[in-house]
Length: 331
View 1 (spheres, rainbow, N blue to C red):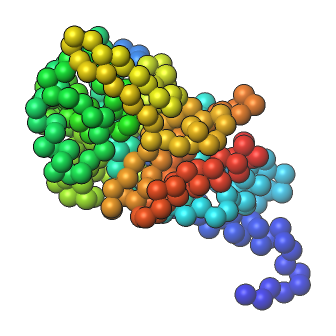
View 2 (cartoon, rainbow, N blue to C red; view 1 turned 90 degrees about the horizontal axis):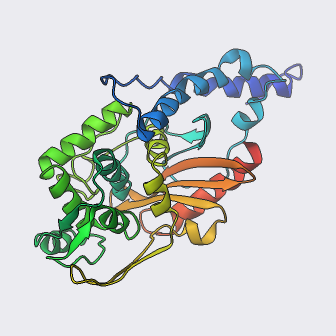
């Protein structure tokens, strides 16, 4: 495109900034009855306010102003990000710093287990002992699922099963928790979807409790906008925060259960200083995904990448690193 000489660089920048404004519809407010305040509810309230802040930050009046504090962050973006969808937000306020396909529905694999954990945490009674069902072994084999190596007949507390769920991404732990807290799969999945509605995740649906590709590869899905809100809600629970911040969890044998060692699948904890979570995800349709949070110099950023690659299991971590490096320079 050739512009007359009288067009300034500022005018061109203003024109570019005006393009995406119409592409970010406001997230519908959750239609849920009033309930006692919980960490998840408090985090969700802040999260659902993020779209309004984003809309004001991208309004024409601000975008065309050379003195706008938000203009530089909107002009620049992290380079080399491969993900089909993603977002980065201020973890404290929910203000979005960068996004791609913000409202595009995509499968997210085992990031689903973050909602599984929230349903359990909302129900409480984390010290109850739950027997590992016999069905976990054929279930894991059927789907070649990630698992925590749970032994049928072992009795583990709900909190120990959360460790098995979130660190090694145990589909066997998700199976056991869903059966106990539904009770039963159908009831538990219904609770996942009602909790999503309560949190304002209006473009999210769960068809199972672990993110595996059943009944179809895309029947469980979400959007970058909703997953930012989900991550903020989840990190409002101290128990969950303490779990996802670990690289390894060791459980000694007792008369009630075998010994276990569970290691995180989140390599960002190893490779990116300041990382404090949250959860990996992958299926053939979802590709490699990551919901993540990191802190630096008193600032916390929370982000998500969806389908960074179908084949490269390190691609989501590479994307997250680029996004966080960019974000800490611009937050």
